[in-house]
Structure formats: structure tokens, C-alpha cells
Image (cartoon, rainbow, N blue to C red; front, side, top):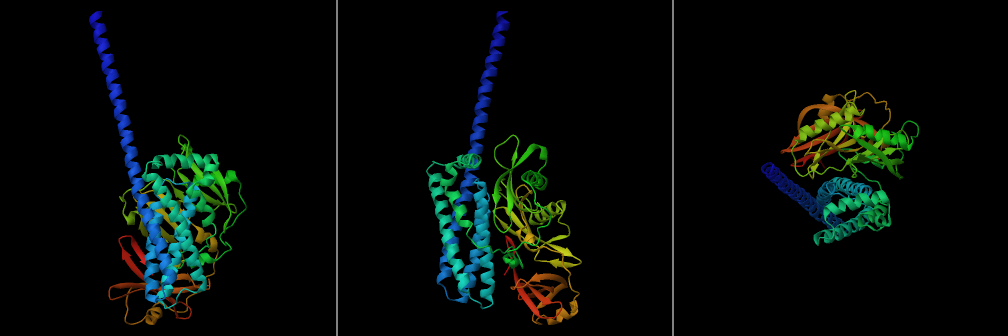
Length: 453
């Protein structure tokens, strides 16, 4: 018995030692994984700070320049910096509600920059209203930059590692304590609510200036219905593993319920959405999964986005000009009805290029202007539209019909003609009723995708 006992004791000791070593190894592995995650957050954060600081600097330059050439260059650079800042901030474990306000602000800056750059290229300088908006955006960019730099200092000296930021953010949101009111990011919420709504998400999205939503149809919904709609809309593998909860009421152009979707076995929200009170339409959605590298191609991301839209009732949608920022692809789509592209009814889908999953959705432009339209029959044929194009251009492919908004918010039916000059690509829009040249856009192809100017 003593030999057996000794053998058993030896086995138990060995198992205990193995368990200790295994536990230590697991602890080390978790610690290493957390350090790697913190390093990713830190890298993305430093990049975001740099881009936000560049946004503020460019806005300050915009206030003092008088050269049309400089205006065009500054605002082209400003759009790039705002997009990049938005992409990197989207990877951070920041407060849920504040992150969306921050993202909306940077979107407004980038979209406004595009509009000013386009007008400057046509010889039209920023008017008094635009100058005032530039000044206001500069002030807001300074607020954002200061808040980010404060967090950067806390993070750099170890007082606030990113894992703790994530835990504190979610704990704060749930408790709605005074800490929320005192946090650097939450204070930005009040500032961003004052920014006018000026958006640009691709060709012809200036229609967002229309203040009264046309696309909200149906009765008002309850909070419980908003939660059900959010669960059905989010790209979840098994909805039974998640719970949705209304956490706020949104006041603005579209009254909405703010909904968080959280795993039943976790604490961190996986998705945040706004669901319109009237009609239950999803206004926007954003996930919380980071993207550290690009694995999925842009073409594949476009197809994933198309499938996502189709499954949610957005049929016959075609992509316009996708862009990439922070390992995420932002893909604008417009409906094609009877062979006509309806550019005012724009929606955006963001795809995580590491996982290939839809990571975001925005339908503000669509909900603001979508309505049943009686499209006129074109009086100008596609052949006649080609004849109206400057002969120095080399046209490519067949013209296609497109409904576009004018600066006056009127909508006109046009022929969209693709053309080239000295290796540069253009889109010429010829009025399908009068034959007048309504708009010219230049397409610039970069590593981040095609951009229109």
C-alpha cells in the first residue's frame, strides 16, 4: 500500500504542479493578450490624436487664406484628415454615445470640406456663412483635440490603461453616475450637438441640408418595439445570445431611441443603434469590434455590404465610391430604379476589413429625402448627351440615367457620362430634359479607394 500511496502522491503532486504551471501559463497568455490589445489601442489612439490636431491646424489655415488654390488644397487635405481621424477613433473603446457624436462631427467636417473644395475649384470662395462655420468647427476641433490630449497624458503615464478605459466607460454608462458628466469625452457631447447638419457621403449628398424628413413612414413605436427592431437589424449570428436595451432618447432631425445590444454573458455592448420613433427605421448602427489589419478585399467588402442591405429590405442598391480608413471600408449605396440611379437616397455601410462583417450603417440621407418619385422620361437621348460633352474628353462606356440634387435641393434627371482627359477620370452630368451640363465631378483613385472632387 505504501508503494501505491507514494505513487498516488507523486501523481497528485505532479498534477498540482502541472495545474499551477498551466494556470500560470494561462495568466501569462491573458496578460500578453491584454498588452497586445492595449498596444493596438494605443497605436490607433496616437494616430487619431495626430489626425485631429491636423484637422484643427487646417481649419485655422482656412480662416486666413485668400488664395482659391490654397482653399482647394487645404480643404482637400482637411477631408482626408477628418476621414482618417474618424477611422482610428472608431477602433477605440470609448464611451458609446460620445463616440457617435465625435464620429458625426468628423463626418461633418470632412463632408463640409469636400463641398468647399469643390466650390473653390470652380472659383467660388467660402462665403460669410461658410467662414462662420469654419470658425465654429475649428473651436470644436480644439475641444476634441484637448480632450484627446488629456486622455493621452493619462494613458501615457499609466494612470488609465486602455483596458481600464473600456471597463470604466461601460460601467459609467450603465450607472449614469457623476463620473459620466465629468469625463473628457462626455463633455464633448454638449458641444457636438450645436454643430449644424452638413453632410457629404459621396456624389450628390448635399440634400442632407433638407431639414424635414420625408422618408419616415408608419406609426410611432414603443421602446420594446425599438429593441426588437434593433436585434433583428444587427448582423448577429444567434440573436438569442444577445439582449437589446433602450438607453437614451435622441432629439434632432430624426427623433429616435438609442439602443445598445449586449451579449447575455458579457457586459460590453456589441452594437449601438438609433431607431426612429416614427416608423421604426434604423437611422444608424455601429459595432464595437476593433479592426487591426485588412484581410478582406474592398471588392469583397462591397459584396458583404450589398448582402447586408438586401437582407434588410434595401433592394436594387448599387455602390458608388468606397473609401477605406482605419481598416474599415465605408461604402455608399444608392438605389437603382428602372435603370435610374437615385443619388439623393444614399445609405452607407461600413465593413470591418479584418473580419469581413458589417460594422456600421447610416441612413440619415435616405430617411431625409426618400419618397415615391414620378421620374420624367428623358427628352435627350444618350447619344445626344455624348454630343454635349466637350470633345477634348474621351468618353468610356454608355451613359446611364441618374437623378441628382442641385444646390437648390431640386432634383433633376441626368445622363451620367464617364470621361477621361490626360489620364484623369471625370463624371459629366448632362440634364436629360434640357441637355445642359449640370455638374462635373473628378474621380481620384488612391489606396483608400476612389474619391470624388
